[in-house]
Amino acid sequence: ETGVTQSPTHLIKTRGQQVTLRCSSQSGHNTVSWYQQALGQGPQFIFQYYREEENGRGNFPPRFSGLQFPNYSSELNVNALELDDSALYLCASSRVTARDTQYFGPGTRLTVL
Amino acid sequence: GESVGLHLPTLSVQEGDNSIINCAYSNSASDYFIWYKQESGKGPQFIIDIRSNMDKRQGQRVTVLLNKTVKHLSLQIAATQPGDSAVYFCAENSYRDNYGQNFVFGPGTRLSVLP
Image (tube, rainbow over all chains, first blue to last red; front, side):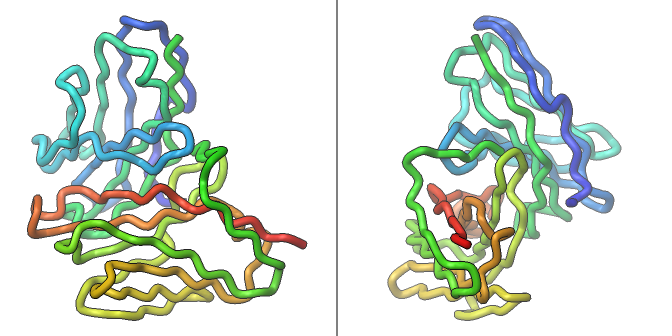
């Protein structure tokens, strides 16, 4: 076990709704990265938070947003859900920056109907 | 994670044999690489990493080889066990391009261990 936890485990939403996913990083880690993993594919980078600020972003629209809290836990928010947002959302934490090893949580499975 | 990709490359090996999983990476500036193992219903699990100043690194039952000339990475698993059955991803990271903010993952290879 990595010590990275995510909630909820599973979530079902309908198109147009909003969703918030949560992640608690491993002790001693202050960087959190979020990834989207579609079925049968490798994870794709959404964004990274370091010291409560966004520190890099992948090719995802602005309706994907996030937060990091003083205790380094993080949230991923997705507005105006689309069917293609159905995926496994993974959180990874690392010491200092992503140049250090990233350890992943178990993920949240989001289904958009 | 449910990487139960129906179209993933699959490697089938007999229990006890050695496995070699290959990965071709795309970015010549990538200088840090990680192999992850992902079992059904779980997030990716760190196996071993290697930086570009090395061409080989060994762990417990695993060895990673890096060939920067042809941009190729391989993961060797010795004495493959049923518990090794999973999807394996290589991930690359480049400090030059974006200060190494994120890893880019390959498409994955499914390893199936036969009894």
